[in-house]
Length: 277
Image (cartoon, rainbow, N blue to C red; front, side, top):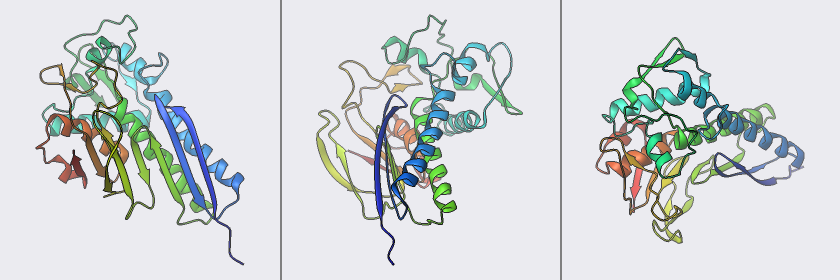
């Protein structure tokens, strides 16, 4: 008897955007709902840890107190910050997660009447024995890189759960506001939107399991979320930057690097493929 293939599509507001999860496997519908819920729980966990918008998140506690005393990091937060610092060092500061001040000024991040300093810089961050300290007041915004990490975590949790159910080839697609990952990505075509109008613009083939795209097509007029950490000026981005890689965290972070430094070769270190339109 042939097992029945069941499909499930869900969407929830999370991570400052809408997160859709689509599943297809030879399981009953309730099982797919349960597994998708585990994916959403994984995303919510990362959101609650690393949200700049939540005053009770671990990120907010770090921004408020890490210059005063060491703070024990959750493993998820430590992984994301360590990767951010790795990229900052490899790019000589082209990638810097400490540009919150400039996003607050544009109204892209909330202003909690904190004292935000122009001295906020990735080299102020020190991690030792799973604790973080700042050598001077600094404000981290993990934003897109945390979003990519959350998508990766959701996928990993659901793959593990499918294996427990003896399903080795489930179809999983997660899309969180342009951070996309798929289990069956080969020969798939993705519609890249026009960088100014947001209309479907060009179809390109998926080159790896994860994709992130950065452009200003949905930004309010005059707001520019990509900041040049060297000049501290907002980037006037007129193109669409897409990065294919093995993980959404890598892809999302590299979109910011290639927006600022399109001739970079750092993608080669991460099995990534940049597409700039």
